[in-house]
Image: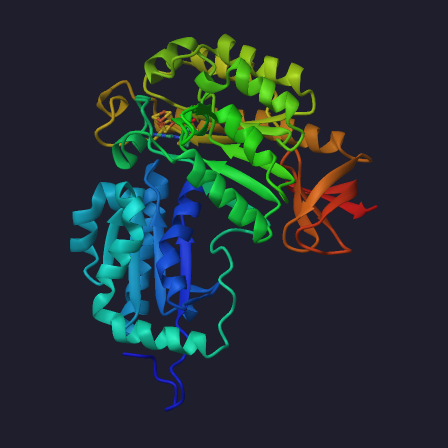
Length: 444
Ligand code: SAH
Ligand code: SF4
């Protein structure tokens, strides 16, 4: 079953990974790729060139799900051109719609849902057993040379390394499908997380991104019998040789407690950035969303964090048009944004997800009103981003070179400069201009 290669040694098998959705989905896509990379597949950027494709799907909003499904549809021609090609569909939409995907797209080789993530390597191995000959030959071709090093796949740069610390979610925000498709919270052991951080740092990672759906709820009893909480993990990660920066995503406001705020203040390697979704500025809506905080208590947490680390920039997520949201509620959201002053905001129109509590509600906000609110909110948020970018003109910032002349500042702003380019190096860059969402600068 090896690809034809004019009678010479079997050609290397090429793998393309595409992930929709959040950072966790991107990291999971990389994990899905693991067993194939271990067998000698080499990563390729373009799906057209691939012999195997892993498509990690998202279902958090209808739009994200539709994008993934339409890509599966488009891959029919690619798959039918050579039935030996392998198409694996994984992730959150695969969890929600597994049976339907198998029926609707019978050419998909393997559908594996997000709840089975820990089992991915075994499932992929088993499913591909039928194609084992091809894979064995691939591995031989790889061993004979020619294979590129297995760079972290789907990730922008090997110097930024994701480390998943927990999976699932124990909350029940009324609009959200995540708990259903990802299951309840499970924390990785302290030792396993630290071993992965050390291995990735030794392999050249300078920035570690700790990942989890409510990442800062992580807590475990470690092998030494002591309880470790997320603040301990942050400190321990920052102390690993070679680690210059630590970020995390997504924190839940409930666990942005004094201990974590103190850890931020004491850990210079913790980045000047936190992305914490607020969702709405109206207490009535927040209560219907079952978020368990008020606008004032959210702001109070952030203010404490800013007091402990004045250079911190805040990012957030906001939903407009949640069922029953009135003009008055929406005004509260604008007000909150004005006080929170997020440097970045991801804004979404509410999208009903089947089986969630909010999807049962009939007081839907008309599409036109959602659209208008989104436009107003975006105008406000874009203005705040622009202000934050302009404020950086003339300043010198520390940037981690991720891909050669491009990287992120400690506050997560993207920065581009001409020379020198050396991935993995921390640079001092003087900001001289802006281009869309990117700061332009000169290396000092
Ligand atoms: N775990 C994170 C959020 C994960 S989902 C947290 O609790 O903060 C990512 C974002 O998608 C959410 O912050 C929310 O803004 C948005 N989102 C989730 N469900 C949605 C829905 N049904 N409609 C619109 N946006 C939604
Ligand atoms: Fe969804 Fe809420 Fe859990 Fe975040 S905390 S993943 S929004 S249920």
